[in-house]
Length: 352
Image 1 (cartoon, one colour):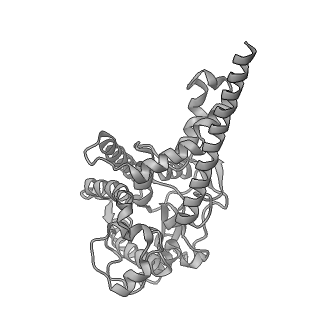
Image 2 (tube, helix red, strand yellow; image 1 turned 180 degrees about the horizontal axis):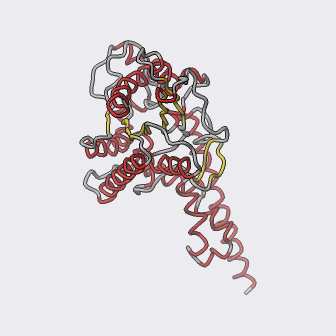
Image 3 (cartoon, one colour; image 1 turned 45 degrees about the horizontal axis):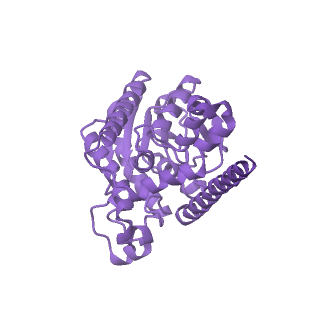
């Protein structure tokens, strides 16, 4: 008996050691990949809990410069912008976000209208969390805007590729584990520990490998469910904003991975990245591009949808940062002006 207990003790120690080693290796792999992709060890940025949206950036909404207000209230227009980190602004300069460039463009028009642009972009947000954020702002009594803008595409594709569910979002696995782990197994009696296991780095690494190594089937039920759920979500936002007397516009953001145009070789060289130009990462590009393109194709006939997929094709200088998603100062300015021209027409047609 003593020998059997000793064997069991040794086996237990080796099992625990193996689990700990796997978790450490997964932690290292994820941290290194985050450093390569994002420039820092953590994915996402510092956030605070919010009952409506799950989380918001610690600093709240980012300041928008170049807003203007007319002494005549009838000449004032308000635009709310929602999106992920590209909308919030992958820059330290508040003057060089899409929101600030857009406000400068709109308020330079000689038509007498004055615009207040609100930047509600939040790092890592996709359409699911943006919808929650919009509802939060309206519920909490903020005066409705004239136009609600979603700037989407990249994060919806990213989180579907990672989690393969229509409801994927940043922190999806961790949040779900906190709710479901208690009854997930008998081990759920130790709820904090069980939740930690279900949101472990090992499970996160499994999702990451799924994202980059397992191709998405174009005919899969999961992809079709994601498309259906996203369209239903956008339709809801369109109806909800209309109830408040506002208009909804969905801009499908430009991404280097999905462009269909030729740019000067000198520009391509400046935007060249290891992921985008290596044949070894074909699955990564496929898994990122497929949801983006399929969803855009499904949305293209919706009155609120505007594709900016090739909006940066005429660039003569680098418009994308190395990840192929975030934009340079010039890229944000070009996208904002393109958006401004479209919003100007819609505002004049609907509110004059």
